[in-house]
Amino acid sequence: MRSAHTVGQVRAAEAELMARLPEGTLMQRAAYGLAAVCARLLGRVYGARVLVLAGSGDNGGDALYAGALLARRGASVRALLLSPERVHAGGLAALRSAGGRVTADQGEYATADLVLDGIVGIGGRGGLRPGTAWLAGAERRGTLVAVDVPSGVDADTGEVAGAALRADVTVCFGTYKPGLLIDPGASYAGVVHLVEIGLDLPQARVTALQEADVAALVPVPGAESDKYRRGVVGVAAGSEQYPGAAVLAVAGALRGGAGAVRYAGSAAAEVVRRFPEVLVSEGTLAAAGRVQAWVVGPGGGAGAGERLDQALAGTVPVVVDADGLTELARRGPQDGPPLVLTPHTGEAARLLTEDGEPPAAADLAATRLRTARRLAERYGAVVLLKGSTTVVATPDGRARVNPTGTSWLATAGSGDVLAGLLGSLLAAGLSPFDAASVAAYRHGLAGRRAAAQGTPITATEIAAHLASGA
Image (tube, rainbow, N blue to C red; front, top):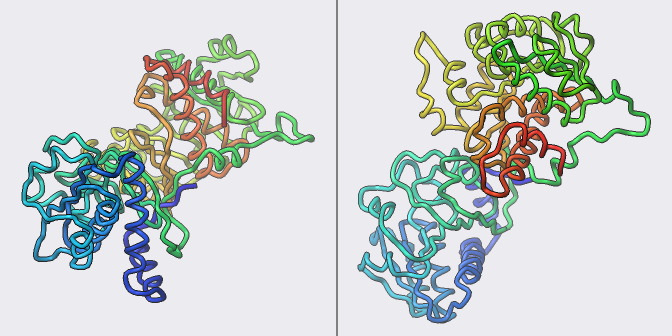
């Protein structure tokens, strides 16, 4: 599992460690790790042209010390000092001692083989300042390596409030930062390398599951399992106008680990024709039979509100998706069973409407972590906020960032498959937080596999690819 810590947590851990180490040890550890990554990227260090963009403080110091190490290996290293009066004195002295030089030629940014972004560290807020904003749009031919976080990206949130440098590689120290995992910041970070420097950190509030974590969470039937012990998921989806949503939600549910799927709705004939193993009903949710979780809303149309009310009157967890979210936004926060909400940013805007004024969806997309947490706290629910980075959040502020996925998942019916998969994982016994996290991971991975040829995919293909892998 990847763990991401806040700036405050990192600063506290650094202070505790520096109190026990000789002065400068921690910076040297970071610089050695940074220089090693740069050397691998260059391949041949001797004769390579390296430009250090050195801002004030320790971030600039890390870059200068790394530049000194590369200079000792024969690289031609120049430093462009962006805050000369506040440059890290020790780092600059080390660079000069190794044969590096200070330059005032901004044109070297375009010609260097490798550029080290040491302008602003993890404590930076807002975009690049006017004196450095030109770098965000300037042409270059070399590899840009960000030191700990790309300058202009908020390390705690991934928010980008102005001009920012777009790195090819980011080398972070001690731990991942949330802003490196969550868009828009993640799209500025490039490939992220973690350099361990010995920090003793608390349990992270922001994490990202990896393949082994997902495999450990996915339920596996035991020797005494039967279809009912494995869990039964109910799907209340589809309508006369959107019968396909029911079929797609059921397709996802069949791949989630539950032992049986019950369907309740007007598309019963279409569902059982496509999936004869599903238990179908056209009556109320209560009449459909016992389940351990419900999925309500995909393609629900005008009947979604009634179905939502029936589910909220019960006690089992409910996945609320699509038209169900529209109905929930009209009702506001509800007491009742545990909820998992699966909005995209447009639906999130409706759910966060106050005094008749919804927030702008674009603003919510730009503040993904904050938005997911706001929704989770307001509705007392686990929230799976869909988008370029899918974020799963809990009411107490924990969050998981999904590392899988592809832009090809932006296709009609994809969310229906995800909702069914999530409901099945809930019915199989996973907690709402784990079920949403695993569902996002597996759905994203299925999308990648379906789009392996780089061609458009359909929701039906996404469901089919849920069968392979974790």
